[in-house]
Length: 235
View 1 (cartoon, helix red, strand yellow):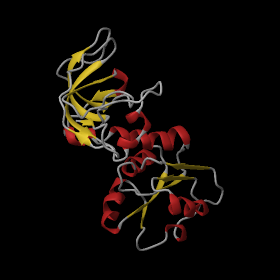
View 2: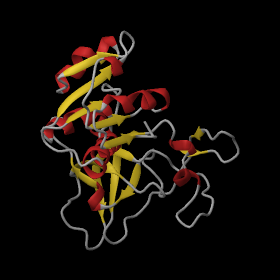
View 3: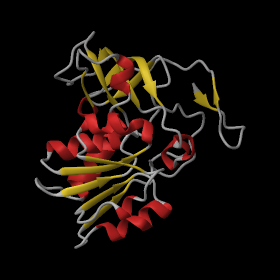
């Protein structure tokens, strides 16, 4: 699938594309499942290359699961036929094709207990959660984090990563997902449709927000001593 350059906003169209070949330190993956982020078709890397030139007929979808189909020169650690999952460069053609190119540092062996559909849903959500909690907020054991939209594609990883770091977790979710989010490790889950979260939580050290707008503004008062906040604009 490619983007049509003749439509605004862009739409996906079926097309035949040449099979890529891996270069040095690259992998070619036969794609079994690919994911497309909803806003991806409008992002700068989808419409332009790294030098700023406009891209034509871009292939979207940068998270995938499949098997190694070919290995470039000097590429180590992977073999043909191995099941992997991961993502590839946002400025390159993505995974909405039969074969895609990626780098060894951007993929990992697919866990055998995950289906290809499940594995392909992991990379971007998990990476976003890690960047927010670990790289930017520097979450520490014993700290208390508020995760908005805890049942969302990023929130489910934010909750589990926070618990992995030894933090306490409060999350917001809809009523139908309260049990699910509790099962992910949240100590307290607030139904955002039934209660105002800012009236039920305090003392947060980190707020991980995947909603923005009014929700972000209402979150500032949830900390006694404000130190860190992360807003995922893509979520």
